[in-house]
Length: 246
Image 1 (cartoon, helix red, strand yellow):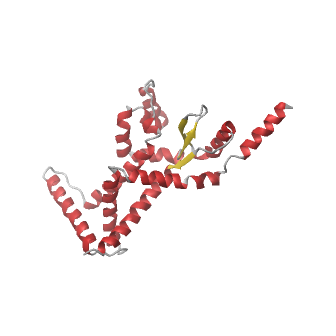
Image 2: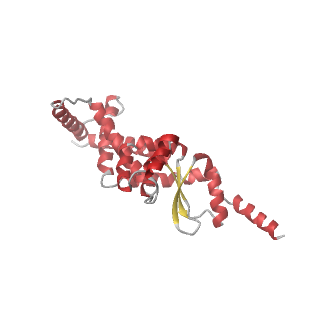
Image 3: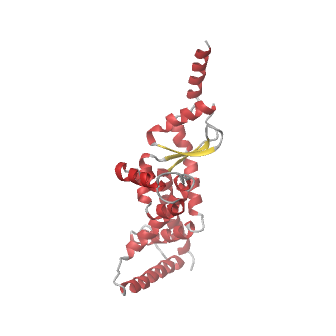
């Protein structure tokens, strides 16, 4: 009888777990918030502005916006600076097209956001007692990018993610979700969850705690898309607004 009651109670708890649609809807604002927090940081905001200015130029070339006044002068100043940098590098036998510098600004901006978003998860994991060579070999043999990152000293991971964020993006295509909240012992933990296991994870947590409340879901795919959206939106707003200023 007691076992039957426990089974019914467990079933009721699982039913109270959020559905996949509820989980995805609940991940929108936390993902936007994490993108904003990454952008409005000491390094993130200058990179964000540089990326937006680069996008402004190509929106102008595509006749999507018309640059005048201060906006046009800012774009021309950036192009002059890049030309001067190109001349200096050319003396050392290095040449690059201007579009590559613009793409690099956007690349670094995304890398900063990705690194900040990973900061509470893989970048912050303590693994001082782990076998780093074993983790590195696991990356070689099984292609696990998370093992590669964890094989690095903690102090170097932030820079690695900033420079090689496309590798992390490949990993996050399969494991896009990070769930922050109370762990089994009540402590706050951060868990990476594969795409197809989110609802099962939510059911497990709900059954263990009796509620899903207190858990926050981030979606790295959304964080990436929100970053691009914010850069494009900032480019349009800055281009239109600064064009109105002498």
